[in-house]
Image 1 (cartoon, helix red, strand yellow):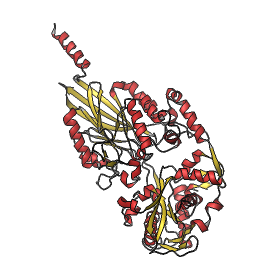
Image 2: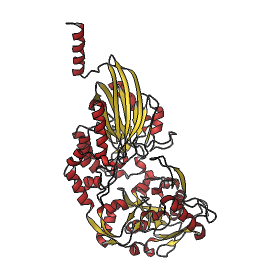
Image 3: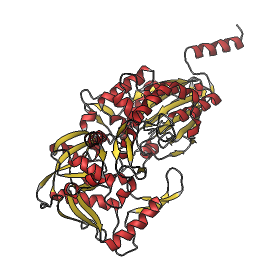
Image 4: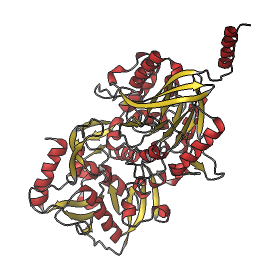
Length: 579
C-alpha cells in the first residue's frame, strides 16, 4: 500500500468514525432570541405585516446555501412562547397538536434551544409539553440553572454536543436567574433558578473536562447589562468579561441588539421580535485532532420582513389561517377610541379599564395598574380578540394582597418617582424623559428614563401628585373612592399583577416589602388579567368610558398644580409622541 493511499484511507476512516480531520474550519453561529410569538409575518388585521420566523428562515437558509449546512449552527436564546395571539392560541386553545413553534423550530433546523422567563410564564402545562415536543424533533431544550428542588439536578439539560464538519461543539444553555422576582412560584413549582455567576463557569469547566470540545458556546436568557455585576437579570457582559474557555456567548432578554468580540470570545444579542439574526464566526485550525489556532468575530444580520420564505409559509399556512380566525373573533364593542399613550399624562380610559376589572375582584379595595404599551390607538367599534393583546400583552395573573395605608402611600411615592421629576415653574420638564440614542437604530429620540411599564397608578382611592414636591412629599391621599376616610394605619386589600407582587420592577423592595414571603400577604389569586378583560366583555358586552371611569368605583387622581403640571406634561408628551 502506498503512503498516499494509506493517508487517504486513514482520513476516510477518521471521517467515518466521526474523528476530526486536520485543517481549517469556519463555523457560522446564527442566533435568535425574544421572538415573542412572531411566527408569522402578518399582524392578522388590516393587512399589516411584521418581522417573523418566516423571514428569519430566509436568511438562515441563505447562509447555509452559501457556506454549507455542515458549517452552520442555529440557536435560540428564549422567550418564544409569549407575546402575541399565535403563541397564545397554541399555548392554550389548540393543544391537541404539536405547538406551531415546536414544528417551526424543527422545520428551520435549530440545533439547540434555551428557554426564557416568558417561556416559564405560561406554566408547567405549556412548557413541559412544548419542551417534550421540541426534544422529540431532536432539538435539545436547555436550562442548566433551572434546578429541581427534589434532587438538586437541572430540570432541563445543561448542554448538548454537536458535530459540525469534524468539529466538536459544546452548547450550554441557561435561563434568567431573576425569575423568582417576577413570577408566582406556582408557575415554576419544583424549581429554583440559580445565578449565572459562578454557575456557568463551573458548568463550562465540567463540560470541557468531560467532552473536550473544540468550540464552546454558552446561550443565556439574560440581558447584556452594563458589566458591573449589579443586575441579576442582565449578566451578559459580566459573563463576557469573566468566562474562560468560551468562544461565543449568546445573550437575550433586554431586546437590545448588541454584539462585541475581542478575538477570543464573541457576545451576540440579536435584539427581539425577529428583527435580526446574531451572527458569530468561529475560525479554527485543527492539527492532530486538536485546536491549533482559533479566532471569533461577531455581527448582526438585519432581517427584512418582506423576505418571508415562501416554502415555509406554505408549510404553515393552515396554522396561520387558524390563528387568524381566532384573532379576528369578535369579543365585544368599544364605545370610544382608546389612545394608549394618554396613560402617561394622567387618568386614561386604558388604565381605568384595568382598575375597573381589578376592583371587580373580591375582596379588592384598591388596585394597582401600569401602562404596558406606549403607543397605539384602538378605534371605537367592534373589538376582536387581537385587541385584547394590544390592551394586555402579558400573561400576568392578578393577586390581591394585604398592605397598610402607609405602604400604599409609600408605593405611590416610589412609582411616581420613576415617572416624573420635580418641577418648580411653568415650562419645566415634568415627565422623567431624556434624549438619547435608540438602542435599535442608534438615532437620538426622546424616551422615558425608566421602564414605563413600572409607572403604576392606583384605583379605588382619591389622590393628587404634586410635581413641585420632592420624592416622599408628592402624594396626598384624600379618601377612598366612595368618600370614606383613608387611614395610613389601616390594612387594605390591594389588587396588583403577580409580576409586581413577586417583586417585578423593584417597587415592592423599595418600600420594604419582602416579596420572598409574599404568600403571607396574599388574600386571593385570580387568573390571567387578559382573560379577565375578556370575561368583563362577555358580561357587559362593551367597554364604555362612562362606566369604567366611574369615580365612585375607581376614584380620581391628577397631577398638580395645574399651571406647572399641565404645560410641562403637554410639552413632554409632544416630545415623546409628536402631535
